[in-house]
Structure formats: C-alpha cells, structure tokens
Length: 158
Figure 1 (tube, rainbow, N blue to C red):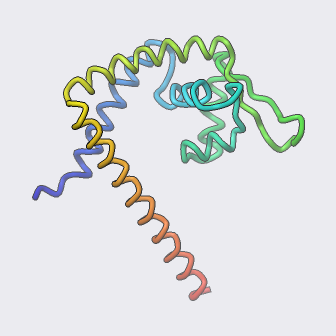
Figure 2 (figure 1 turned 90 degrees about the vertical axis):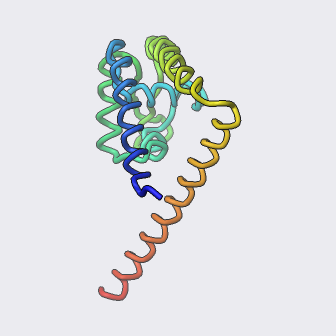
C-alpha cells in the first residue's frame, strides 16, 4: 500500500486553501479571516464571542488570533471591545458590514464546495466525512497521549 496518505491530504488541503484564498482575496479577505467571520456569523449567539473562544475553536495562539481580529477590525468587519462584566475579557462582534462580507464570501465558498462535492455520490461524501472524523479522533488521542508522556517525563526528570 502506498504510504503517501499524509502527503496527499496536505496537497489537497494546500490546493483547496490556494483556490479559496484566490477567491477570497478578490473580496479583500484571507482564508483565516473568512473562517473567523463565518464562525461569528453562523455559530455565535448575537454574532459575538470572546477572543479566547476564537483562539480555542481555531486552535491558534492568542497573538495569531489577535492579529486576524485586528485586521478584520481595521476593515470594519468586526468590533473588538472589553467585556463590561470582566475587563480581562475581549469580546469580538461581527458588524453589519462584516455580516454582508461574510454572506458574499459564503456564497463563493459554497459554489466551490458544490463543484467539489459533485465529484462524489452522497454515499461517498458520507463515507469520506466518517473517515476524516475517525482520523481526526485518532490524531487527537495520539496527541493527548504524547502530551501525557512528555508531562510524565518532565516529572521524573525534574
């Protein structure tokens, strides 16, 4: 069996990101910026979330998410403010301009996804999703086990 599965996944992801970035670039967005807008638009009550929630959801460092949010804020797509109840918490809220930009970008992304999905039957798409979920769960568990090993090694050596 060919063992280049990881490379194939990476190549596909890279090319999808390249196509996505090209389409989004025409709208003045990056792939990362689009995903933050879409998350706020589709997943967050009142289209707002704490910065920490965004960091956790996208699995990025605070500085990385702060940079993405700062650029979106500069374009007028989000507003960043301090939470009134806890001054340590920064709240990120989608603006009406950001919502409009998100809807425009979502239409473009859905069009591209429709083209990709047309290559496969419903059954193949369902199987693919199941396979990717299983792989993700395996990788999460492997990562957790590795972190536990490193922690145990630090305790025994320190």
